[in-house]
Amino acid sequence: MKRYNIETHPQLAKMSFPTRRLSYTKHAIDRLSAKGANRLDTLTIQPGDVVEVEISYAQLSKLVVRQRQCANWDRVMVLVPEGSSQWKVITCWLNHHTDTHKTLNRARISA
Image (tube, rainbow, N blue to C red; front, side, top):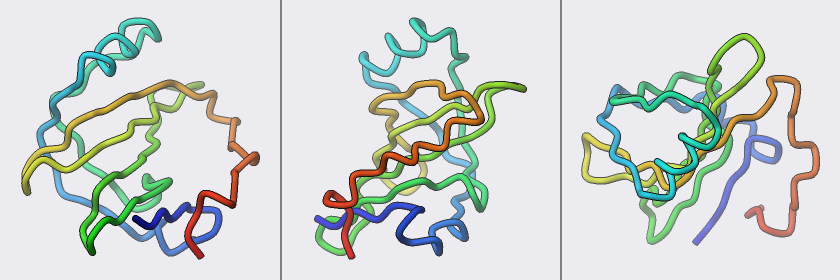
């Protein structure tokens, strides 16, 4: 498994994915409720949304995206692909739009 982050691999900013349906784990549903975030039925990933990717056996196995929720908050979602037309939301949270997570643990990121 290889993990790539936008801080170390800026080319991730070019990634995009067409609209896909979303399904949610119970944990993700609980997090949405606790954080007051609305539940989306579909998601379109635009250039600049991808924060991190994991590749296993030459296939995309996990994706972390960050999108604007409202004026002050961004929604961060951890997704795994389910076929070619759906993402499963594993977990999600809200970050203040000024929080840029400059505490990246580079030891966990592939070169």
